[in-house]
Every structure is written in C-alpha cells, then in structure tokens.
Image 1 (cartoon, rainbow over the protein chains, first blue to last red):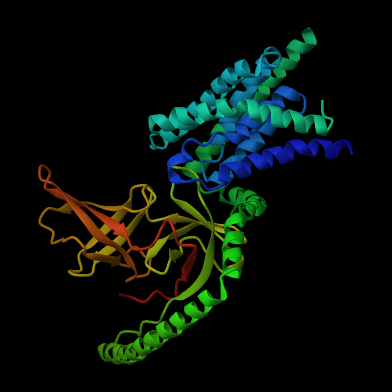
Image 2 (cartoon, chains in turn purple, orange):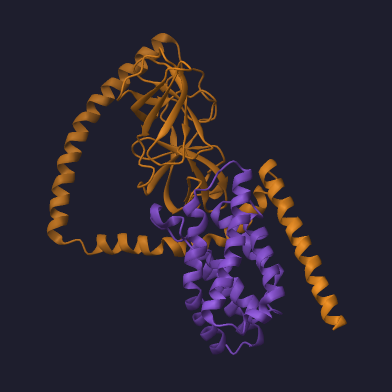
Amino acid sequence: MFKLRYSVIYLSLIAGIILMILPLPESVKTYRPDWVALILIYWSMALPNRVGLLAAFIAGILVDVSQGTLLGQHALALVIIIFINQNFYQRIRVLSLVQQALYVFLLLFINQIVTVWVEGFLGRPTPFHAFLGAPVIGMLIWPWVFVTLRDIRRKAHLS
Amino acid sequence: MNQLRSQSRGTTVQAVLLAIVSIVLMFVDQRFNHLEVVRSNISVALTPLRYLVSLPAHTGNWASEWFTSFRDLVNENSNLKANSRILNARLQKMQVLQAENTRLRNLLGSSAKVADEVIVAELLSVDQNPYRQLIEINKGTLDGVEIGQAVIDAYGVMGQVIHVNQHTSTTILISDPEHAIPVQFIRNGMRSVAFGNGSSDQLELRYLPATADIRVNDELVTSGLGGRFPADYPVATVVAINEDLIHGFVSVLVKPQARLDSSREVLIIKPRNSPSPR
C-alpha cells in the first residue's frame, strides 16, 4: 500500500510524456509547454525527498527517447532546473500561485535555453517565437498544473 | 545545520555528476552508434505509450468505417467494382508488356528485374520534434525490418529506416534536413541528389550547373546509386528553378510525390539478396 501511493508520481510523469508526444498541428507545435518539466517541478517542490535529481535524469532520458532527440539533452536541462529548484523550493512554496508562475517561467526558460543550445551545437537554429513561446505557455498553465497535482497528491494521501 | 549543509553538498555533487553523465551521453550519441541498443530497449518500453497516443485516431477510423451507412457501402462497392474492371483491363496490358520486357531483357542478356518484396506497415506516430522529420511505424525486427531499408507509400519514396526495435521502427523522411537521396531525371537521365529542408512538401537539388536541362514538372526517380534506395521509384516533381547567376549554379525546388504528411499506410522494401548490377 505504501508503494502503491507513490505510483501516482510515476503515472503523472508518464502522462506528461504522453502529452509531449501527442500529435499537434505544425503551427502550434513549437508552443507546446514542457509538461514533464512542469510536473517534475511540482513534485520536487511538494515531495523534495521523493522526487529529486535522479528522477529528473531518468524522466529526461525517457523524453529524449520518445522525442528522438539526442540522448541526454532533456536530461541535462531537467537536472539543472530541478537542482535550482531544490535550492529555492522552501521560499517558493509559500508564495501565491501567480508569483510561483513567474518563478516557473524562469525555470522553464532555463530549461529551454539548455535545449536550444544543444540544438544550436548540432547546427539547428531555433526561431525566436519557438524560443519564448513554450515557457510562456508553461507559465500560464502552471496554476492549473499545480492545483490538479495538489488535488491528486491529497487524494493519494502523500505529504 | 551542519547536517543540512552536508546534505546540500551531496545534492550538488549529484547534480554535477548527472549533468556530466548527460553531456557524455550526448557526445557519445552524437558521435558513435553504441547507444542504439539502449535507445531501442527504452523505446520498446515506451511502445505502449505510442499505441495509446495513436488510439484516438485508430478508434476514429474504426468508428467511421463501422458507421458508414449502407448506401455508402453499396455506392463504394459499385465504384470499386468499376475500378477493378478498369484496373484488370490495364493489368492485362501490363502482363503483355511485362512478358515483352522480360523477353527483351533476355535478349540483352541482363537478369530479369524481379518485383521487390515489401512489408506493409502502418504509421504509429509522427515525431513531434519540430527540427526533425521522423515517423514511427508498427513493424520491427520481428517482421524483418532492418536499418537502411527504403520506405515508400502508394505515391513515391518516403524515407528510410534509421532505428529498429522489436515491434516498431523509426523512419527518417526524405524531407528531414539531415537526409539526402540520390535521384535521376526521367526525361534526360541526369543524376542529382535531393536534400530535405525540413518542410514536408519540398526537397532541394543544390548546385546544379546553370546549363542543366531542367523544366518545371520534370519527374525524378531514385537512381539506385549509393545502394540504399532501389532504383526507379518515383521521388518528386520539379516545382521551381532558382538561378543563382552570380555563382553559375541553379538550385531546384521539387515536391515529393509521396504524401509525407498524410499517408498512414507505408511499404518497407526488402532488398533482394543480391543487388542486381545496373
């Protein structure tokens, strides 16, 4: 029973991966928020002892495989932002949702920068709107992600 | 407090280690092929997710087929019958032509050209990375798919297989910016290479001499050079010719024949055991 409760975390991350490979029209594809990053940020804020750097790394590798990107590209970005989050979550947890969203934007932005740099190294430049679009959308949906995952966490009696 | 500090040092070390691991992974993945096994194993584990994602589309198709009204079916049936009559008539002609062709080939002393063996596969998912043009299909090593096999649809060449798992495989489309396919003009036999440029309705022939004899609507087929793609499959038609008079080159934009963004059924061509000399 103890183990089963924590499976909620893995299920939510798998849902995130599904949301990231769900087909979208070409025109809105670049605005797809990094769901896995959002979900990881939530869990590492709520259960920092459960979800940490290793979880971020593994989730990143799974995203890399499912998206056909370079193995380690998303892993690196996620490890970096979760590391930053681990140093700040205690101060961020007490803020309002709107303030949190700004902080999440920063994290997503750093995540995006790392990914784009790697793409740049491979010689695939990224258009500007693609650069900022996804973090902005991620910031806008953060309150919903937060509330949904919090309700799920409470239902599963995780604390 | 001390304990807290040492704990935070622990996570720092862990973070640095994991970051280094990811960077090494990226380097190895970029330069060598060792990680192919890892990738394909993880990908097998992710296969159920891909099925899950393509489920709505499949269900939609299934439902729309199921609920097609009776009259539609009757209409479709009569249309299909008519079509098949026409096709049969053409086929008879084809057979005669084929027989004639074999006879002529025999006369010339070259080996008869056998039809290629194919594996029928269905599209599972389209890669969502905006910088690549990859598709996932539902046949893998267990069905005889191998890396490098050509993939076509009903209209022309789509791409080639680059990763294979047990039940699925990944195909790079000819429109991927990292893909190039050797082609030949049907009209005058001129050879060239068509590069993908990332958009699914365009390929590019670069650095052709300005004097080359190219017209809009010229058709391109695979030339079979390079040994990857079998010869004589349709690839694209010319849509625009851009002259770069300063450098004395022309670059030609061509439109792929294959419906790269809408075909759901694809064929994987199994190469014959001994590639026939051309």
